[in-house]
Length: 600
Image (cartoon, rainbow, N blue to C red; front, side, top):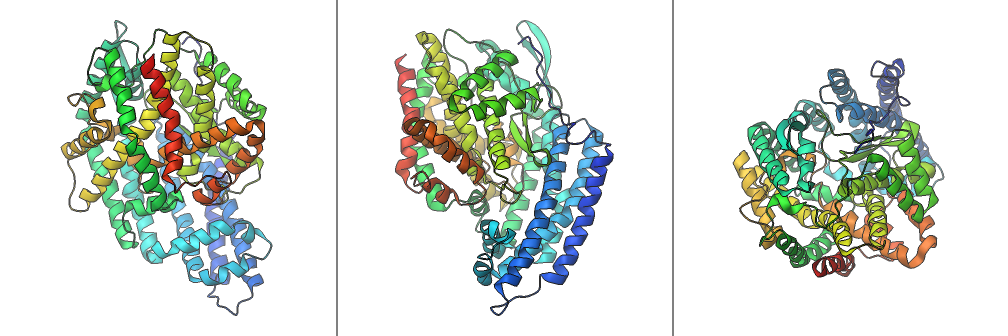
């Protein structure tokens, strides 16, 4: 990589952390919360069967409009602050302002809880009111969903207390994990030179072409996590304990129960998908063993799990990655290419690896300016090119909703459907590359990159699901030590990877750096990725059949993902997500790649 890797530009959102515009918006949020509170007291009175539907619709429409305005401000402020915190955990000004913002959000959550409780009380009368034209009718799905979920609320006082305690409880644990892991650095020899690298860069060395370097990185990483395992284990215990306690008092069966509702799928759908995934493990293990054989091994040690294979292991400059993505996005629709070009040209992407920056990758919406911002840790590998295409897919999803004029409430998309566009974009790029005429060793290298991603989303995600499930169950009885967490992780890896992995060289500290485990509001932040991959592959198969005619329907689907259950949205394309056969069909696409890989 010889060209400059970009940092994102947030200056069109607010001029700086000291911006008068930002301060004015923070003050506006505070005043608007008070105004909505007054409106609640005067208008959200008990209603019954004799209350005119038009009156209820009128009251609800005012509330919907005001909440949309409030969320537009708060979601923009949150994204702006996260833009600093996620890329520089040393930024004390951003940390301080984010803490202040967290306190400011307490009355927002209280108002949301109060509205949800009221919707639960008037649930029987909502259908008639939602037939009346207006903002309430336009947001019928969200209002009915909130009314149904009201059954899992504690009393208003308890919900307020829980929100206030979360600032010094769950959220504080989340910040601890993020800060500790982002600021950890490791000294390691790479290419004959000693370097001090942040942990995301060390983790990315899993894909280094030299096995000795990969092994050094693996050993250095385990040593680094060993040194800081105790505070991270404390964070895990704090968060999972908090979630268990709140679910118990809210009448939830368990954390998975709330995760399913948030994902807008049912247990039958999850069972069908997970069953198909589990049935696919022998196929993935064939791939792991075939890969191990290329290294003269019977099973893969962890440091070879992400290793590139093939004679040509190309390294991309950021500019080369940009051109590759734009070229292949254009084959799907010029609109997708145009969106991505704008993201590159306007510095919506922060791709450089550096100390203080979070690992992994994500895309966040910045609604006030109708844009997205994409975080990555670009190292020039094809895997990171695929990751960039993936995150740009999330941005295109946001673009489709902005273009359709969807409000903040209408844009609230569950994780299951949120992965739809990202998987589609990643598949577009990988399939386009594979379709090019190339030597067998080049084809092998491309297949390898694709199968690494597929195995992570199917096999590793299943291991994370098993890990989190056991952690939640055992946390109900006692705290877990760092050693307990390592043991659970290793057993989960053996249950999924099986004989494809060298049991003496697993990764017992995978739980330390995955931010997905460290949230009181996003439990089981794992199976939606598998849903997204397999659902996306199913949609891609339909695209291959329909061609250009698919694109408008697909973009309409993306615009509507916040306004229906996953089953209802999938039914638009004739997909039954409660049927195991649908998931098996998507997995056969991956199986074909495994067969080709083994044949090369």
